[in-house]
Structure formats: structure tokens, C-alpha cells
Image 1 (cartoon, rainbow, N blue to C red):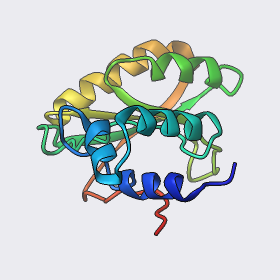
Image 2: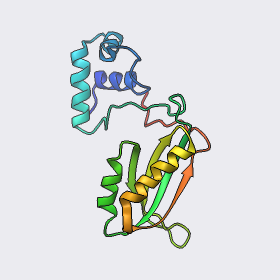
Image 3: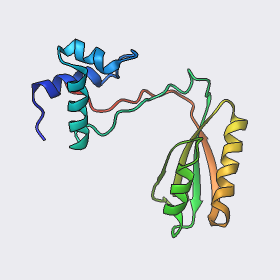
Length: 158
């Protein structure tokens, strides 16, 4: 799919985030001189074509009071990692979960799950729940806590 001028202007208008407005598509439309319906239709078309991967909220966990952010890492049986990862990813306190290759002998972990808590004790309780879910397939685990806030941004076009 090739972006026309309106598509490019729409991506530029949205790439730093939608406006904090009760009707953000109307606000973007007003900025670009088009209707909210056209904004939504163009974004849906670009999403269906894979040009826009997703439209979602990126919360600031610290501002919401989640000051303990832990990447839980798990060494689980390779023949069960996909099914177990699906189950872990469905937990309401897991923001994202994915499989990664092991790097033996220093890094035995093949399943990662990010959890957020108001304290390290809360994160440890969440990790214990994950461990219970993993059951006998679990060989080892750890929690890596965030020490800095990193700004996450995607590709930007001008």
C-alpha cells in the first residue's frame, strides 16, 4: 500500500499519540480539515494493510502508581513453552509475554513475562502465581526489575 498525502498527514498527526480529548478522531479531523469518519476509515484501512500495526494506549506505569516493574524470566520445558506462554499472557497482571532463545550457559530462560506492581512484594506475589501456573515444566526463574524509565517510540515520519 502506498501512502497518499492525506495518509501521511494522518500518520504524522497521530504518531506522537492521539489527543487527550473525549473525541480524539474528531480533534484529528478538525486539525486536518476532514471528518472524524474519514480519519477512522483511513486508519482502519492502513491497519488492515499492515501499515499501522495497532492503535492503543501506552500507559506511564509510574504515573499510575506501579513503581515495581519486573520482567519475570522463566526456564520452562521447550515442548511446553508455547502453550504455557499463551496461558501466562492471559493473566490480567501480565502486560506482555513472549518466547526468546536461551543463551547457555549464562542465560537459561526461554519465556519472559512483564508484570507491574505497586511494590516488589506485589510483583513477587504475581511471579509466584506464574510459577504455580507453570508447574512441573518450570526449571528456574528470576525477576529483573526496571531501574530507569525508557521512552518508547516507534518509527516516525516527517
